[in-house]
Image (tube, rainbow, N blue to C red):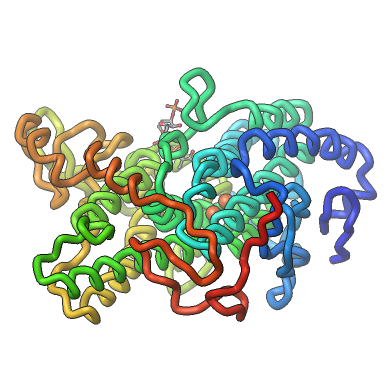
Length: 473
Ligand code: BYC
Ligand code: FE
Ligand code: FE
């Protein structure tokens, strides 16, 4: 597919669709205004060593080079269409995929796409102050890489809204630049995208756990029978891998640094040496993992059943025969324990209604792999402590466990005991203040703040002490 480098880089032949081109070119200045207002504060005139998506080829899809963020070439890229692709699952399985919005599912598709789209600018807003206290140029560059790519994901979804949803789509696209993360009057749609991210450990936990929800939701949408959505999300996943890398290795490097301090100081006073104590790291894991579980929606969901039945949203790797051989999900139930009338008891959720849960289980397994790598860091350092993922019942705001008192092992307890102990499980104000107190900007190539270890290697074959950001301000 030919790439066009007009005002808006694209491989969707924007030139041949004047109306769409004009609509997107009209939206572009609003996007840039939003970026100036709500994108990274400061650093807009500096040269950042960034990768830019320039094609959809598996090798060579990205270009690395110095870019000023406002000049970033946010483009619209869909993976090439698969010839004669059929819907893979649900009631419409085996039918041709849709290249236009099927009228009977318009409302559902719009809702899914709007929800997906809204998270992208939200995350940029949440992270906008972090550049000022980056622990190194390497990390600062990674933050901005994630930010510009979330900006591109916004473009990817706005393109679909504009091309396929007419006036409604254009209005939704305007709304994307109007809602604000954490604003009580016009908040972002999903809760985790309204939480403040005020320190770098929170940023790493967010990219580890919340971007990973993105991986699974995008994976489910990449199976969609609405082909433009499947193709857009598939390409978004290419960029997403780096966001997850930033998160996992970021937390891993914090852990590594803490073990160094612990091993140097026989009294193990991590704070005295400006590190982040292991128990605070665990509390951050608990907080961001549980908040991210909420992003999967309710365990028993008629919305999820409808999306699956219609062929709009599948399971993760739905068409991988090692994962699934049966694609109707009309039989079987998901058994789950929850509280009803004060008692824990077993319940059966018909499989289609349990699709959020099925997706979430795949997500949990993926998270556990990262946990195992973090624990390897502990093991290598000769430490006996281990990190864990809390139970899916702990600290939930959505679904059957919402607002109930479960400890991180998933044991139900009375509210009073829960509230007396929750300072041991979730970051306290004191913890947050302490972590914030460590956030100082380190701007010299190859230097790192004292609470985080350097990465094992630099980016794109560059050394760790490469000048990832060149300041002009
Ligand atoms: N917060 O049937 P239910 C990413 C509402 S991340 C607030 O259980 P459903 C990224 C729900 O709206 C990926 N409200 O839920 C990461 C419904 O409300 P109504 C984002 C919530 O619809 C980092 C009610 O509760 N993509 O890309 O099955 C950086 C019952 O809902 C929440 C997507 O999410 C919540 N967490 O599931 C940048 C994919 N959860 O109708 C980017 C698209 C539920 O009763 N979204 N509710 O008023 C979806 O597929 C679904 O909307 C959800 C929710 C899975 C999110
Ligand atoms: Fe994204
Ligand atoms: Fe991401």
